[in-house]
Structure formats: structure tokens, C-alpha cells
Image (cartoon, rainbow, N blue to C red; front, side, top):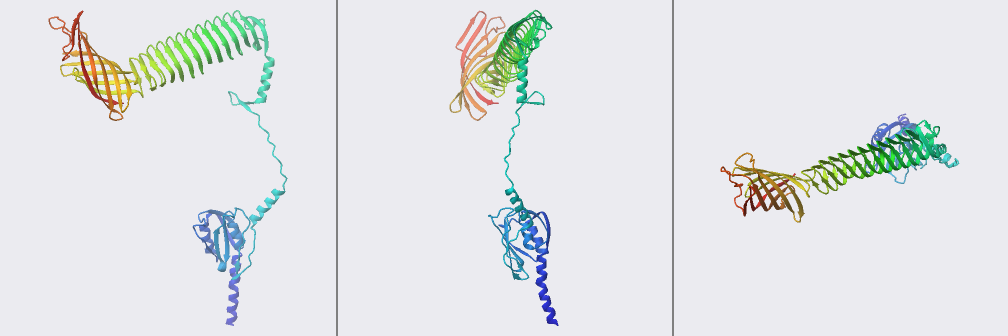
Length: 537
């Protein structure tokens, strides 16, 4: 009896193991393969054998099966990977990566062992793979239909948000051209009192005469108005008005008015106005009693009694009695008081102030300011932000201590200097200089300086002025530190008298090779040297 029971149990063990391998359930959503293997090994009598160097255990997979066999479950699990497997004795699953396996491929061959006995190698397809195969077959059977490409009509952007297709714009243009008439002449007293009052707005005339004021569709020839001319479209030719010309289109030719020429679009030719010329863009010669104004780009020549203003790029010669103002670039500016631009291609010349960011040429004025310059600034005060700016400590035989500030460009810089002597004297001076770079960290400096010398008092009222010319050789110790040394020649003219009223001149020079009195003026001349240190800002 006992032997019978034992035999029954031995038969049930493989049957239970086989039924467990035929009833696999799992649902994984973005779970790492390593965690999936651990979960299956804990829940089922299965063991995975693999190398973590080849099997991507950190790869996340998603799969779901209900009550299917182990091989079918593994097929579903490895569908989106290049992992292949083989089931051997004792439900041990060998895993490896097959580079030739494509994703969503057909099932791979496998050997299934159930109930402790090997089974024949079989090929099975998962439900997902069967569905993919069916879809591929249907696609192969479906007839191919070439796609018909219908191009979209090109669109032209208008000033608003709407767009007009090209073919519609061309149609409207043809309609407008066909509706616009051309006539030889017209005569008007006022806009509605003319020989062509009904169609004046839509007619281009070759000859137009307006006794007081007239409105035309366009002019292709000559138009003369006693007070004003108003044109809806373009003007080609000659236009004259006693007070104003107003053109809403383009102008090509010559415009003359006693007051204002106003053109809404582009102007090419000559404009002369007693007060002002106003344009959107212009390539012209403009002359105005007060000002010329261009809101866009301008090229040509502008001459104004008061001001020239260009808000766009200007490739032009601008001459104004007061000021030239360019919001962007300029070519050459000449003004009685002020020139201002962002970038100047050639030069700025003014009676007082020039302002720019970048200068390729030169600045000439009483005060010049710019960020950088390729040429030179010539003026009483030159400020170049990225130019030649130096603080200098120096000394010589007459004025032993000196402090100077130099600013401008290398080609031309200003010198502001204070000197102090141990013999109860001090000096205040202004000068000009230029420098040339030499090889091997050397540079040469030529300078001229005027110094008012005060002796035995805070401020000497009589003339006591020293003119000094000097030449230095500069050696660069560091990027900012320089040493210099060089000769100088000084001429001191003085009207200082002694207590008895006799002309004696300055007593400051310790030696001199010229000492001469002429016409109540004493002159002393001597030679010496200057030496010191500079710091480049």
C-alpha cells in the first residue's frame, strides 16, 4: 500500500510542474529586465542564466500575458529586444543577444522541457507577431496609389495680418492698371474744379497745371501748382509748387517747392525746398532751407540750413548749418554745431561737437567723442573710449615734478598737465601730441606744450608763458606700464618786472642760451630733457 502511494506522488510531481509552466501570468509596464527575471524566478519554477555584460538588464520593457505557456510568455516579453533564449533541463533558460534579430521579428527556435523530459524543437508565433504578419500581408496586397502633390499658392505678406495669394494680387493689379487712365493734359483751379474732375484721381497726366491746388492720379511729365500738387500714385519728370508737393507713390525726377516736398515712398533725383524735404527713402540731391528728413535709407547729398536727419543708413555727404543726425550709419557729416551717428565711414567735421560709436576716418571739431577710431580725432578735447588714454608722472630741470593726463587717439591726443617746482613756482599747461609705434616694444612721441608759470604767488597776472617742444622714446615694460626719456627745447616769454618797474622776466630757468628784451617782453630759451613713467588706461 505504501509503495502504491509513493508511486502516485512521483507521477503527480512532473504533472504539477508541467501545468505550472503552461499557466504563466504577468503584467509589466516600464519595468527593468533584471527585475522581471527576479520576479519570474520567485513565482515560477524557472531559472535564467545570462551574462549581465551582454544582456541589457537595465532596459525597461512592457508586456502582459494571461495563462499561456512559458515559451509564449518569453516570446511576448522579448518582442522588443534582440534577446534570444533556449530552455534546457530543469526549466533553466539560457539567454543571449543576437544582433541579427530585428525587433518585432518572428519567433526563434526553442527547446522546451516539460515534466522532466526533453521535447522536440518547435517554432511558435506569439499573438502580437501573428497580428504584425497579417498587417504586412494586407499592405503587400493593397494597390499602390501615387500621391498627388497640389502646391499651395504663394502668398505675399501685407502690412496687416492678412495674406493675398499671388494669382489674386496679379488679378487685382491688372484690374487697377486697366482702370487707371492716361491723358495728355489737365488744368485745375481746385481739386474738384478741373478739366478732368471726374477721373482725376485715376488718371496719369503728361502735363498738369494747378492754378491753386490740384489732385492727380499720377504725373509722367511736368506738373506746376500755384499752391500745391497732390499725386495719388507716382511722379516721373518735373514737379513745382509754390507751397508744397505731396506724392503718395514714388518720385523720379526733380521736385521744387517754396515750402515742403513730401514723398511717401522712394525718391530718385533732385529735391529743393524752401523749408523741408520729407521722404521714406531717397537716392537724391536734397537742399532745404530748414531741414531734410528721411525715415529710411538715404544715398546722395543733403544740404540744409538747419539740420539733416536720417533714421536709416546714410551713404551720403551731409552738410547742415546746425546739425546732422543719423540714427544708424553715415558717410561724411559737416555741420556748424553738431554731428551725430552710430558708424561713420569717412569723416565728421563740426564747429563744436562730433559724436559717434565707430569712426573709420577722422573727427574734426572743438570736442570729439567716439568709442573707437581707425583714423584720428582733431580737436581741443578728444575723448576716445578705446583710444590712447594715459596718466603720466614726469620731471625736468625747470619744473621738477609733473602730472599729466593724455587722451585721444595715437595719431592726435590732448595733454592736460600740472607742474610743481621746489623754487616756489607751479605751472598749468595744455598740449598736443602724436605717437608712432616702433619695433621691440618701443614707440616715439612728439609733443608741444604751453604752460602758464606762476612764480612767488598763487597766480601770476603778467604774461609768463612757456612753450615747450619735446621728443620722447617710450619703452613698454608691461601691457600698461611704460618708461620714457627724451630731450626738450623751451621758450619762456614774460612781462614780469621788479619792484622798481624794470623788466626782468622769469627767474625760474636755471640756465639759458638766449636772454633778450624786446618791446616790453623778455624771452629766455634753453634746452633740457624729460623723463618719467606712463600708465596706459
